[in-house]
Length: 205
Image (cartoon, rainbow, N blue to C red; front, top):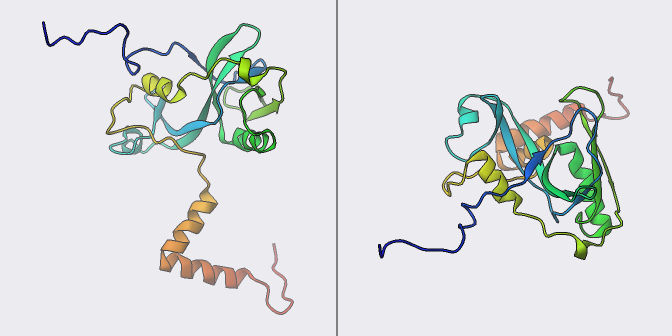
């Protein structure tokens, strides 16, 4: 019995984080208070009737040739019930959150409310983010959102973790590719010359 490793509590990675994932319903979420100080996100595939994270190697979603979409996550608290949860956000929400952080130094302590523009479950999400009356030092510390997602997706293997990223920017990726690929860069230059007015010439639209 000398080989047994006795402990007083489960290891962090083995201890379930008992917080629910909260998505925007057909109507709207109640006003929630953000506990996180930053967004954490990943690209997801819809696979087997559920969301599955895009993986760096041997990704089942890529092998199945399913599209992938970025989703972000925040630790939040409902001030009415004091219930903590993990709020899922979509790319259009990111600019508003970043603007708030730039204006106030952090998103922690902000009041956030999500709503859908239609009654459809996959309707476009709108975000309202304002200052709250809650002092940040009196708020609970955020739980480990990264660990919660890994437990939920059952991808705790160190060799094949989800790629936690910011939203994709197709235009920026295209420009970066043109800078590193001489053929793409030449094609982009030729295209720019063709579409640039010469000597007062007007381009029809």
